[in-house]
Image (cartoon, rainbow, N blue to C red; front, side):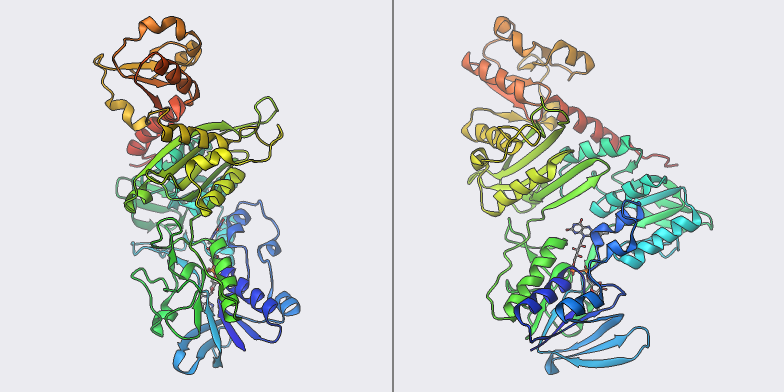
Length: 560
Ligand code: FAD
């Protein structure tokens, strides 16, 4: 059997290695247009920022190492320019010599990936404008910084790669501004969870311009002037990071079925509509694991797994890709941001009725030094209670909690099932009730009706005419530092002796700092017949959401 793989990075390299492990006799050829195979795309921003200093660390395998270990013929700087399914052949151009040649295949795997989107805006072709996909792009950016010594950069697009680039450019001393069209960074998060990231990244000195887009770029020789939908800014360089587009012109050229977005349509075995041709990775349409609808979620994990699945099927092992849920994690300076599954926007778009809750929990037992707080949000389907998605923003231990939640979602857990998980505990690592258990307890209380919630965005519309009681149960010290207009204070520990100050027969809206003490107050007051509502996420979430919303709506640093 002769298998040709187009693209030698995440999906392609994974397919090739699995093929060899399953079939020692197969002839396996990787055609890679670039100079490198199996490189660490995900590490590229950290080379620019200097965390990774060794160039060699960016390449996990070389053509030689693939030959030695796997007996795979890797042809770098060989671009496949045509596929002819009628004859099971491809046309390849050797990029150094310009010579083209034909290769035949029994099976073909496409893993051509996705290319950074370069919107058709005036000035985008300036030599001071960069995109980041591969090692040559990385060197281009690094060399520009070393040679031209820019002092400022604009990053257009606040997704994972944009935020990583902003951090890394800031770390090497540039003055960095992120321009984002949406009202918040990191699309898999909801605004309420992104608000913490906005505050943190701004405190680190990265400027944010949200709700705004780039109209045109003008290169005046020494710097760039960028005209925005609202205002104008300037900088010495610009990173365009507004997403990626599946690179599927080759597939389109031989009538492989594509969707409207240009992604290759595959079946669960990763087979395309054309005989003997499989496709994997960023170039394919995937099924969203939660909604079961077609989706585009370009990530390394899914690409590698799909490569393995294509290889399995080629070698006669029945293996199916069951969908992508979008589990992702991001380092933002010392902060960690992670998400999996649906957020509120995607759940609403899918027409799913959901409920949600928040907690603010310690990463490990607070009496053991070094614990930090993390903010967790989960969504579940109202009727079935099945978990739909999770978002965490914090510092220590975020990734492990997200991996537990991602696993729970993968196995169809309901929100209340999180209460039953027995997770590792010793004080340096966690708590006897892990944050994952805690959010399960809160969700269970919501589901059982033990607590009715209200949210930061509801606060402004609560009546201030005395028809409801607005109660803040934090300590007087906390209240002195900031309060919500219209809420009066009775600290939780003196609530029982002050019940006469809370009129009977009126709903009581309660908040504390994070939602825990207000829940205790809620249960206490319920015991005396009050109808109560608890502010999910507490004053902490309210404050950051309201402040950051105001900034997001009005901020345009340096815009003229
Ligand atoms: P790619 O890795 O893009 O590989 C496709 C290859 O095919 C390319 O090398 C290309 O040159 C080659 N090719 C295309 N057409 C042809 C042709 N006609 N002939 C020959 N060769 C061709 N994902 C995560 O999960 N976590 C992260 O932290 C993360 N960070 C990232 C950071 C950056 C800067 C980037 C760019 C991506 C990041 N990703 C991350 C995304 C992840 O890298 C991709 O999802 C993954 O690499 C997709 O694998 P792929 O095989 O589909 O495509």
